[in-house]
Amino acid sequence: MERVSLFSNEFSESWLQKLIHENASLLPISEIESGFANAISMGREIKTKSGYIDNLLISPDGYITIVETKLWRNPQARREVVGQILDYAKELSKWTFSDLDISLKRYDQTSEGVVAKVRRHPGCEDIEEHTLIDNINKNLRRGRILLLIVGDGIRESVEEMVEYLSQTPQLHFTLALVELQVYRLGDSIDSLLIIPQVVTRTREITRAVVRVEGDYSTGLTLDIDSDLGTEPETLHRRSSGRTTLSAQDYFEQLLQNTNSYTVDFVKKVITDSQQIGLTVEWNASSFGLQFPDPAGSGLRISIMTFDKKGQIMLGYAEKQIEALNIPSNINYSFCAETAVMFTGLAPNPLKLGSWNRRISISELIPSYDLFMERLEVYLNEISDSQTTPD
Image (tube, rainbow, N blue to C red):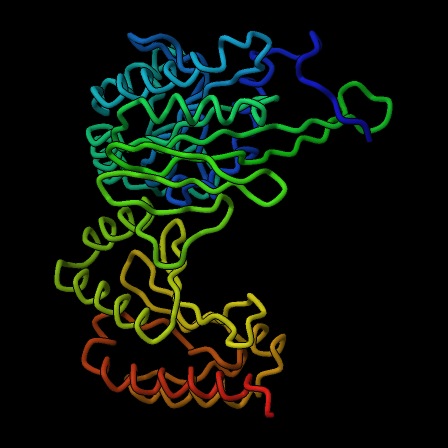
């Protein structure tokens, strides 16, 4: 297997665009902003007043990603590309869903717009049109857009780009640099292995000055001075409980599916959970409460998951409990003793340590104090089991 440089004339930015258009899942979007994951390619070279967007993608929940491909043959382009993709994002933030829909129909020269393109994607056939349109309009209006610069040789340009960004006012954009490492398998010209890697990302903030520290072997650290204060953020590590774009999206979607009282209650659950030592892991459409191994192994035990529709699932911790050599009866007892707090709930006989169904957040509210008391006992039992006797 041989590493192939994309600098050669064998490859071009058009080749990169086509690759991304036909293989959108190649982009490591879930590592950057999980709320934008499962993005569906809408088209290439989409026309705007600021120029042509190389690749435009939209997730089933209406979150927009724009991609600028770059092979860095021209060193001057390293700085220009950042300003270019920011201009595209600023232009899109002036659009409405109708503007975007018309632009994509012109691209294809067909009557198929955004909704039809999304519904053609497997698993998205039943997407509600009005919800998708509302979400796209909202994200365009707020400038909530993920910007990806994708290519080869990006690694050497990180410091220049971050320096440029430190002088550039940000809206609500998140920008990430993705390096594509290409390897040729055997002697075949067309047999390629492509490995995407996130080189760096900016945090979504209003204004920022970003300083880069560290190196690639130990991990880069960004010190971010902003309206939000100074916060060190180590790349490739997700801070537990950190308010991310996914957190904002989650609460907005939860409000659509429930009510403001439920949203406030869930925020209280998060605060209370963090106070007793749990961490929060944000996903595309849910968040999980997890308990870090007290022995310091780095493993985290799944406690429960709250989805955007207001449903709660006890977190399948059996394998984690087993891996940490924690007595399984601790987990089973917690499951059984919390199940009896809710009508019609019982341990799942096929999946020990989990409930036989999900419960709604509204079911948890009346039994919340009792549940949290039992949860604290459960966490103490886990901690005691991991304490090594003197």
